Image (cartoon, rainbow over all chains, first blue to last red; front, top):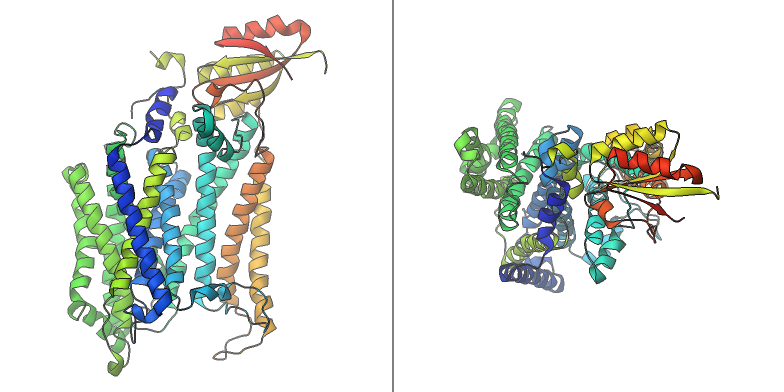
Length: 438
Length: 170
């Protein structure tokens, strides 16, 4: 990347915070309408009971859990880019780390709603918290669902703090380059940051430790999510490869979502010289890697089912490929494991249309992966008498549209009110001496 | 010291700032504060900064977190000794998961709090001499000097490439 002077970074990056056009407001209104739709559906479900959703014997885990796993997965690549690639000193992450981290925060927030939505009596959700109650009853810490509560709330806390810490110096930049009310608001959130050498010294250490702590956390979170399934005895779930399989899948879907969000973002704000094609190409290369792991996991599952000699396990996997949900299964295999291989061709991974199109396909494919895993196993357990099917009702569809709308709504607000690229980190790559500045 | 003056030099380039810091320190001046829009190891080296003690606080948080998580599991399980499928009352393996998550959570909270504390944040007032350019594209260095060395220091800073040198209060 050509080196750019510091002030140029400010001008270019702060452009996203200038008043947007009408199209922005139309999109924002659409997303907000979607949020209202979702909220109304949830309100309806609370009023009428969980029976308004399609989940029933034998499939008690439907789109709510699918969306939960999907959104937690989306969150993961944000932490991969902002923390893991930071530790590995991969310089191409700098321009995209902020928006990827924002994506993490919003995706975890959306994911965190689904366990609530899934509850029959959401008003007593606090029962899962470890607090001393009248009868001295505590949550069962042997249950992976309790691990899940702890892991997801830790993940949300850590990603919000990590994101905010990264933002502090940039909010000070906005404060110093604006006046009036805006200066006051950003001044408040920048905590009065000055950029003294002492502050940078402590900040640098804290930021590095944040990254170092977020790295094992992100791996643990999706492992814990996978244990929600793997610790049961249901055929197709009870498997030791679930943790790495879920983590790889999470990053696979998240990277695709990063592409889906960044390609329009760089176009709208004219960030082509900051979020370069090279960066998108690097994401595509990482997608090849995660796609290969995911494809391998699909294969290994079949091998394990076959090799174990367990007839229930074997039957579940055969049924997945040829049974009632075969279409979903083949969408999953095609979109997640086969289509991304197209990125091996340089022409494909350097063409925005292909990058964007394939990223959408992977998003769809990863959603179906969760569908196939969750519904595919629950519908077809040991006892043939209790086999059954599941299809979502309009309430579930409404809430799903609401969740996607909420995510895009938050991201649109972020793109308007917060510097979408870290100016501080970009300046570190800038021109540092008089000679370089003509 | 009452007779000491503070001079603020404003620089536009990192390499010139780093040189100025080295010169000023060699001549025995005390660098009070360096303002920069981004962190740079060159500045830290020139000032001879020690690693931040934040890491020890973070470590303390981590250790406390593991202990808290495991203690929570153990304490709650012995409150109601409920044997399920002949499993032990105190579940050791699940306790590791809880301990791990608490470890990360406490480390991060301690890390964040220590960072705020050591960096003196939140700060309600900015010093009068703070220049808005320090967060944008300029560097500032605030140097202490005795009254009679004022001209000497000013010339050192200017020679190193300072755009502007002026005296500041407090």
